[in-house]
Image (cartoon, rainbow, N blue to C red; front, top):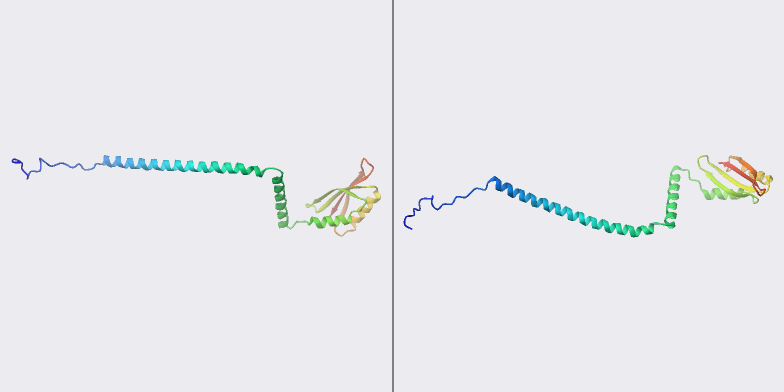
Length: 176
């Protein structure tokens, strides 16, 4: 080791390169790429999980939709529609007690008269009755029976005639 000058730093000294901006950019790009791939993979996996759940729910819906078809369901839907209509009428204060009205009409209709149609019209607050009987005398008695009741303010004969069997057919309109 004779001949080596220890005070001189030029012979055995290594130069350390400072980390340049090109190496930092490369590391940042790799980190960003890894984060991007991780985000994409997570989103893809979550999408597949949701698709599996959706397929399961579709299968359950298809199995249960069999029960939501047929006459029973139609009856329930019709009943619900009637309840909703009654609720709307009750809110407007236009609800007519059908039982009371029909009971009163039952007491006013003569035994000799056969009704074939009953129609309540809320718009003009009237009842239309169609029926048949044996004679015009019974029709006149029926008109008198309706006119003398305090429930009706007006009774009109809309049509009067004979059917094929010789019975007298009529149509009345009675207003409240």
